[in-house]
Length: 470
Image (cartoon, rainbow, N blue to C red):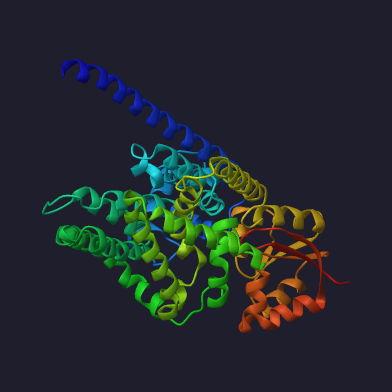
């Protein structure tokens, strides 16, 4: 027995070392493929968060004017990072995105972590798929809390109670952090409840107590926002940035491509991965908590906009990401026959994902800095650049080159009367401007009196540059 113990211990140590080395390698790969996106121009939501929260006093983040753009825990981390760098735009861009970069890279490892000993090859396949998942890569390059939220949700799912205790503090702490990052983590809470009822019913009460305590803590943290507009915002009838039908159509292409697509061909591969891969993954008991949790959370994200229209954002259904990665890994490695076909399929998928990551790394979410620079070049030294509609105030504050802003037609006409020719208008959200009935006069005037001279590609929204006709 002694000899067995002595020989088993070095083998266990070697296996643990190999696991840590593999996890570190996956994290490094995930980090490297996300770095180019971190260096791209800030886009509207990020600029809003930077100017109104990250650069504001600490107290304003945790108790100031309410905005859904303030992912509180993430804003606190971003502010801490911003204080460590010089206050110029480039340094701030990298600093406020650093928590998301690290969280998104760590999430690739966290999604597959429970399988590291039982099925290491399947764990590696899932982790690599997550490292190269285009949507997760995109979220990891934003100064927003979504990548952090996904990491915390995965960690909390792994920490679900597995033995009787009055209170599971690690699980409760992870859920407090997730909910304080973004309230849409409520979908994860519901998913955890379903998981406990299906997989660990005898521990349901233990989970419920831990969740209730976590909920009480989060409730106290968010109560301060009730007096600063939270209730009015969510009770209001404002429409989301995309119609509900578009929101549904974009879900599957988003998780597969990292951006929206209209071609029906892009619906088939992610649907196959999610349905067939998910069915195969269900045969692995270790994966069931993740499958149940994120499937239920996805269902909540799809149904919630019906009751609360403002929640109708594609990013609110980011729970599809772990389901996609788990399904892809299971589809490639769980079936035993035809190993060469499996390896060919794995190589094909990884190459496809790498190509999509390259597209994300070379096309910014919104080319605001590039559009301002280009508009300034077209206007010349004596010309006037006008930022038109959403994101213009923020772009003018952060990127030099915009002389004035206009959010309605009377303001634009007033700016034109005082402007030096040539007059150049840069529009960061053509789709929103053209769709908003209140802004219709501004949109019609722009199309009648200006000529589009340049349009820069963006994954969230392109930017257009117009020159006023002589």
